Image (cartoon, rainbow, N blue to C red; front, side, top):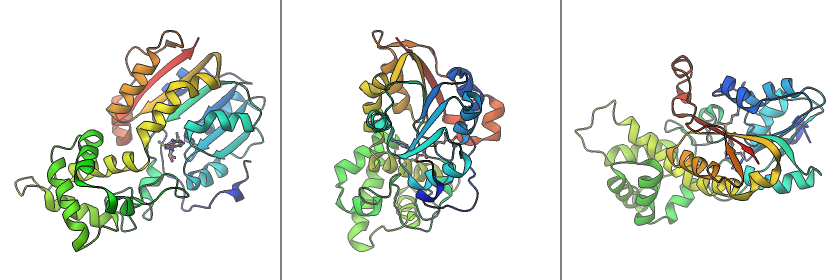
Length: 304
Ligand SMILES: C[S@@+](CC[C@H](N)C(=O)[O-])C[C@H]1O[C@@H](n2cnc3c(N)ncnc32)[C@H](O)[C@@H]1O
């Protein structure tokens, strides 16, 4: 299954820096021989270190919704005891069933977007991208964001920008997007950036105008990929059904709504022994070296 030719080839080299790497490894408490699922394997940053610690007697199963990320991971994680599968972490139970694995010892989820996806001009994740506004992790399913936007009404759009982006100008931006569609349909990431910018009051400084644009892209990405639903699915049953008793799950989230979901799930005393009463954040040093780590929150729990 870990055959690099079965996933699309991506060049140049992956640039993503794994977030909270030291803390992830500490919380996972890895030993040789363990079976681990990395549910968001990305380009394999965390996983390559996991593989080293579980050794040749361990087993690693890496999942990702994005087939392009698996192309990178396949190159980095070439080992007979590593299997990569194109699937959502919400499908983890059926992936393990297919592989004949009843329970695993450790699970890692590092949810959200990778810097490699952000850097890919043809995916539309970056507001500066000249390519189509796609925003899907899994480009083999569903429809790109530019098509989805054409069907989305004002009320729904405003709610998405409000809830997922916590965007103060949600109403104005949603109105401008909806008004713009019949005049000049939004097709690219740059088109969307321009429309968002045009909805902002002129009094907002040049520097501050970037933040609403980033929040809009984040909100639409969460909506297009149904990210909160995926997380809810894995938290309400899937993780507990995949982990062996005493097994550990570590989750890194980048959005307050996601962190809240994780926090609440780990408070279920019949299922979990919560290992992090407060979320773990990146050290100031890591935050300086990797700005992406600033919003990262790590929580972990042991299955009873
Ligand atoms: C922050 S990156 C992971 C980076 C990885 N830990 C590393 O060190 O290289 C998040 C990854 O999760 C993937 N992803 C997002 N939602 C997913 C889901 N529901 N199931 C599986 N993968 C998902 C994205 O495609 C992306 O590759």
